[in-house]
Image (cartoon, rainbow, N blue to C red; front, side):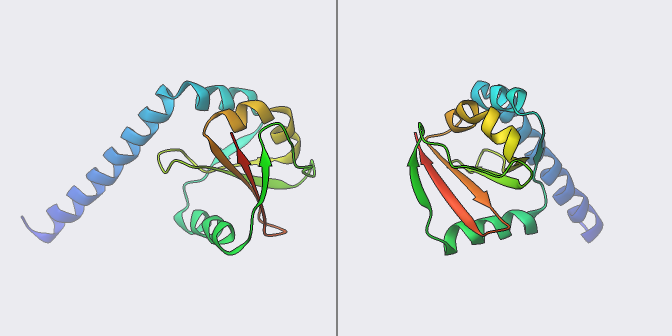
Length: 127
């Protein structure tokens, strides 16, 4: 196998892995309910942006809350939602959408982290 074929195989593997991941997301009922209830959201695919969010999570102490408590997000600010499973996507949504879909967002996984990247603040919601 020459270099060109190896590169093509690597691309095919990457595309296939993404397809498998998205198929798993489609079978996850709680995740789909979350997506349907959010007014606007974006699934992050940029590895640099995800790494930045993970860095904020790892370097800042998270304010721990129960699933019944809600942080008070600003409606016009963007927040990132990171669930405790690496199989789940990282999403970006605004505060208004997050508040209106709160129960569906925190139901997806046992631990849900809400990250305010602007203030570098993290909330850990335990289910």
